[in-house]
Length: 425
Image (cartoon, rainbow, N blue to C red; front, side, top):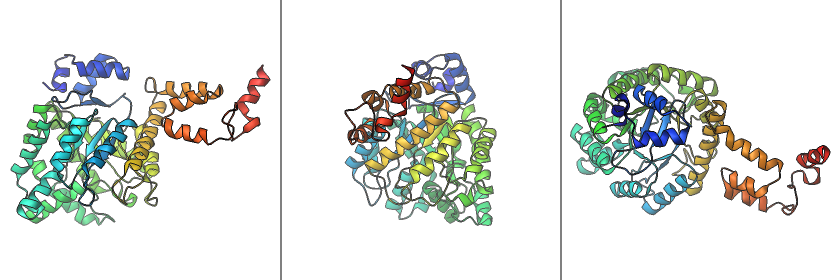
């Protein structure tokens, strides 16, 4: 049985008990929100890991993308990046491999990952069609269902499925004349297939078959936004909203079939439109958990997009986004390396934690209070240990010429905390 089925029968699973304790949420409230589709427990029934719980009233979670490309296909490199992501606190990882032996890397990631693993199945489907039949437009629906079944049986915990891009949405897109028509790689694969074959999106047409596979393995469906804006000038436009309406309808069908579902969101969004995007998603998708890429709040910062993404992520999470897909400094420029992965995870974790504090998520403020107590005592070792990146904090502290003193090089003898301590004595 899926976790949704168990919740509807008011039964308690070990996964529910784990999440209730870990998140400080009452078990009955957790089950109610799972039943209503407001919380999902991301974990394939075949995996022996703890679930990643995403949704209303829980800590904001962070996903890190790894995976090969045609120009960078080292499996060992991607496994190291996965280890870095998990070390620095990623709650889930996605394998976005498109180069080399993509089946082998997925299986190794599944074998070695201690957190849930997601994929975008259209990548393997499209690459297989191109290799076997010469072009991605030669995908057939059976390819889709066979690869979904194979990946689910291997243990993949969540799928990004681009089911919302329909022929109607493509017609809308042609009229809209965006700056960047489709920035989603998976979305572009499907759009090309639909345009060349003059047929409806098979991920939409065969959605009931996809639900059967997801239910069999308790795979969470992450309904991908093929029409997410790739420029802030395109944000919150008609194609994006038309697709979102369809995603809301598909989410309802998933819930009725006792399948966990989350909704993916933008993308590139200016600050003043982030709240509206969250409100629209929650309204149109009946409060399904919202999974956002960033969002990036400006397009001018290649090399610093972990910062633009963290700014948008903090606001989005505060307004109700539940799951942040990290953005690395190398976004738009190259495949990320280990340092990029680390910086991306930490930036998104800071954004999510800032939102958790503002939303008064149980226990969120405790971390900050503990750091403040250590700071006023000038307990440098304690501060380093408590920091989100102890290695970097220790490096900065070590570089201080006042390392053996009761203060740091910023204020030296004029440390405000030291002065007030002496005054109150």
